[in-house]
Image (cartoon, rainbow, N blue to C red; front, side, top):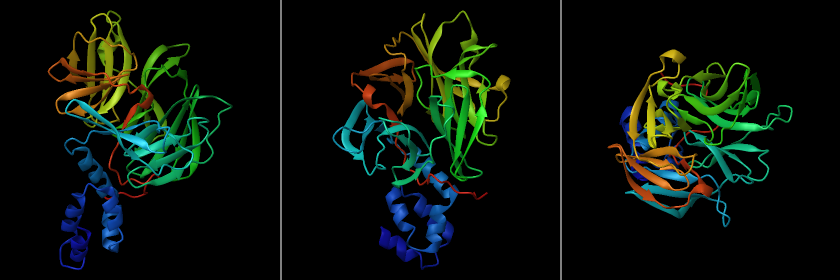
Length: 365
């Protein structure tokens, strides 16, 4: 394949046709190798728009339900790959190796770039793309008077091409800019805590989201917040109106990225039902105008573990992750239950990505 494509580089084939051909290649390893064919090929493959479109094409590939366990195996330095297919879990056959030395935990991801740390100390952090095996070590972690880290997240700003790593503390948050090699900090205006049923930040549709417990003189409870990379501010996003109804006892709030949109999950304790809402596209939406559409409600659904969360779509089913895996049909029925213990290896999507953790500073319009 490489030889055939290389021959076309000296022909009269228009660059846009070559770009279409290259965009059809899902193998990141091949595309990285093809950058050496010529300067024009390197320009095409390195273009931010090409990288963005390639990631979207990979995400839309049928049966692309690959996940990484967040922890390495005790026997090797690889993150095991897991595939959900046909209502079954295929696990443990392949591992993504060549992890940066000293890192063994995946905290979160953004456009295929992972934030790694050391399970024992969590005093060092690195960004790593498992598809390209390229890495970026963060400068010494920003210290805030010994305050502990409540949560983490990565946000990608496609205008500046900057990957920003966000560390949320109890009363402040710190931002590391990969483009500027610099730290910045801001006050939260309230005291926050990890509520225990959510993971690290979810990057979707241009912003990174968290569900946090908050405490202040004016408010105490749970908030959905997001990081706006344009202003480097954490902002509050209003949740679906049903969640503010005191007559309905919802619990176990959680979020995920489903079909490129932000999804919010909650469990109605009294009715034993699962509710999933999908947020409208766009991040610059006023809190009072946020449009949530209820995607599916499933009754007679008993949650055994409160940290259960939507994971992905498989055919016409939503896959939920708790200590085991459940498949919920969009026809509002619980179709399958797989008693596979995944608690020690919580999943994170594996994405074929050309993004480099340092980002790029320009984007084609």
